[in-house]
View (cartoon, one colour):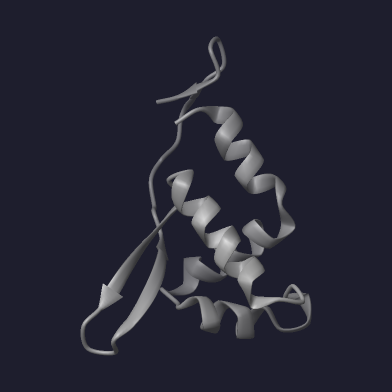
Length: 90
C-alpha cells in the first residue's frame, strides 16, 4: 500500500463519512446510505462505488453473513506508519 493511495481514499468527504460510520459497527451498503441521511449522495450506487474504492485501497473489507443473508462492510483496523523518505506505508 502506498501513502498516495490512502491519501486519495481519504480525500473524499463521502469516503471519510463511510469510514467514520464503520468505526461504530459493520454495516451493509443500504444501512450506510440510510445512516448518511442528508449527507448521502443522490444515488445509492455512489455509496457502493465508494465502498469498492475503499476495499481496493485496503481500508475496508466485505463479507457475507450467512445468518442475515446480507453483504456487510467492516473497517480494517491497523496501525499505519508512513516512511516519508519513499512515501511507503509500513
